[in-house]
Length: 69
Image (cartoon, rainbow, N blue to C red):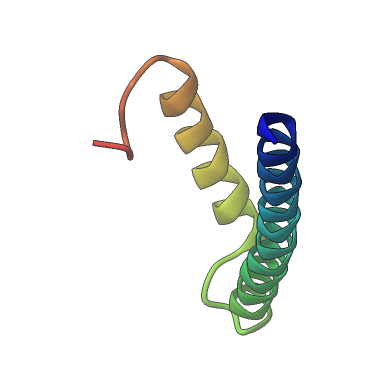
């Protein structure tokens, strides 16, 4: 009986992981669409986006807690 419970827990965990993967895909797709729309409308340039991305990446890789704080 105990192994059945453990197996069911594993199946449930795998199902939740699959749901998270789908959610992540849809959120990434929506985010990408918003960025493209902002670029198309001239609200930001691709260069500004790349510069800010590099800036934030540098902050995150140097051990800073920004923007997590």
